[in-house]
Length: 75
Image (cartoon, rainbow, N blue to C red):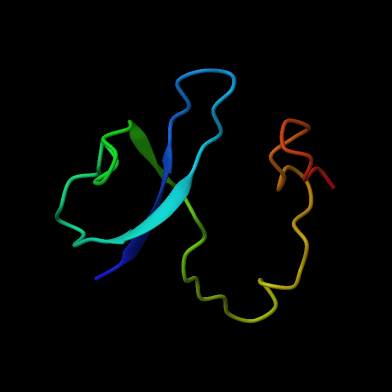
């Protein structure tokens, strides 16, 4: 079963998100509340396992291969 990362959704500007991991089946629905505190939560997207062949993993993308200036990865 995969392990998913969740974080609490701050309810005020003074709150900070707290993260926790939970082992869940892929068929189970995402949590909407922290299992211990009941605070609202959201699932955090994290990197997964990927397989690259040839030089695709080490060759930088050119000509539109970046997200643009929004994320800072523009080449």
